[in-house]
Image (cartoon, rainbow, N blue to C red):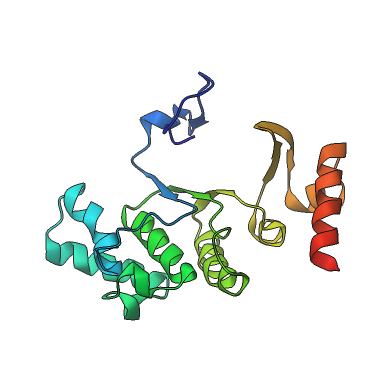
Length: 192
């Protein structure tokens, strides 16, 4: 969707424009953080503000601190990634994406690389973004989170859409056998 690779020759549209035409107002949060290890949390957030947006260091630092504050990490601004927990690293990555003022945020399995205890930190930030009206496209296996926060869920299998709709409908009354199988397996693993 973001145009990193075009494997199918198909196009994705948003607001009647091709996604590749409106990439600038789109933020991306990767599964494995992609933070610069030799830069502090603040520097990871401000680098693009200075290089892409042309802000002065002072302007970028002010904006970067505001973003770290938004994700609950202002007190960790001077810390390098190696001294941050997985949840904190992911929140720095979210702050970095937010600093670019996106209209849409894409998340690729934002909690899959985290210890279970840290998942809540990231999901809380994402819930707040949803409450603030941020449009998000999230690839996730966190069914509980999707059920609580999503307006619409798309269930895919092997790169194809199997079923889509409101979470309450999809999770309670799946139409496809494949989604029913997935939900049964998920429930067995998470309810026992």
